[in-house]
Length: 499
View 1 (tube, rainbow, N blue to C red):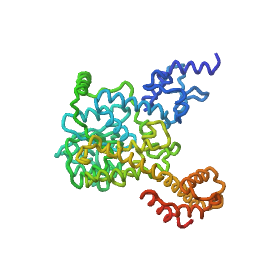
View 2: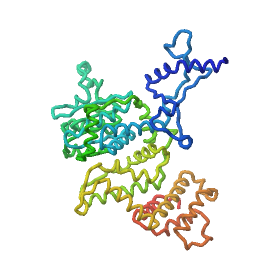
View 3: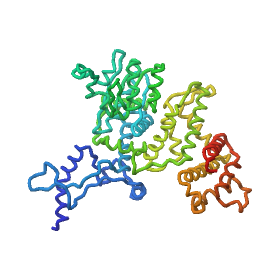
View 4: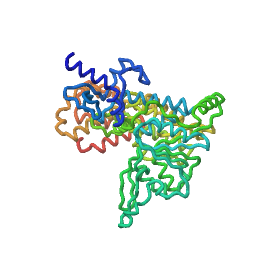
């Protein structure tokens, strides 16, 4: 037996101990046996999807792991702690969403919304009458993850901020320093569950604002970074004032748990309750939270190596459709509001939607899914004397906008203007590119194609692309819709220094 074969046999014999140690260190070990994965993928799909993998194999410089038996070498190569198999992690997330849906009946869309909240590092608010299993649902969601710190509290009017941030350190206090004993507090937790949220006093809610939004606990000279990743809060009622409105804006995801009197649904609930007795059961295999943090960094554009691209046209349409949705909602709810902060954060949602579909570029399909973040699920408004869900109002706004843009040619106009803006931006950043316009054949061929559709009467002699011709094209364009007009005026205003 040669050395490599011998080493391979040693590794195979000791694989169980290798995996055990790695799992204790927070790594998730994926089997190469496809029958053990929750969702099978075809070989073609595996090749098509970008794979970022963690592997361990025998090498000549392998390290001996601690605790090995005398005379037996247990090998593993160094592993990159921040690299995971993205498609497999996504499959496990989907499998867990399906698992939770089978145990928390009738909540499929809300479960999906909760996973988006966790992937985007945002917070979620669940509203319903009492006895609707809000805590049961939150516990099932949190039970998906391993190696994670959870803080849970049921709010009451008598609570003080110390109930959340830990009591004062009396030894430090005697020395004139304000310090909290934060061990076991919300500050150290990754996932937070706050039950009966609006029963908390305004003092407590105000103190939670910075922790939820900035991930910092600030109390005078005491400033501590908080580990809070996602909070799920539940409530039986809404309490509205200046403090609660500010706190509510920190919850990007909101749902109302609806009553369901369907006989078959109630039968399924009876069966699941008989099995679980109202307690969330832990799955056999959880996902280490490090993998969620890894995906979250990609989704929030924090990973330097892996990017989920959002084309400018998608950004543009995201804002157009959001504004249309807000306008339609205000016909029924005059004070309906989507803050600029929330609208900007929709970019994270779009990346998460693409990742869950095993894509690294956002499409209009992801914009269509934005109702999960923009709408309060299962909230209804009166539209022409008929009840309509916020979700339906959004999907109608999406459909009407797309039909109108395509029918009027506004889609082509927006794409054309955004392409020209990209050229102008590159020239501003690198003036030398002004003289190399003719070398950018691919980009200008697509521009020429758009020009012919937008200006069908233009002669072939006008096909030469120059800064001057681009400027004239922008100036001559007759916008089909108001949003394209605003785009045109913005380009002419912002880039007049190079025109």
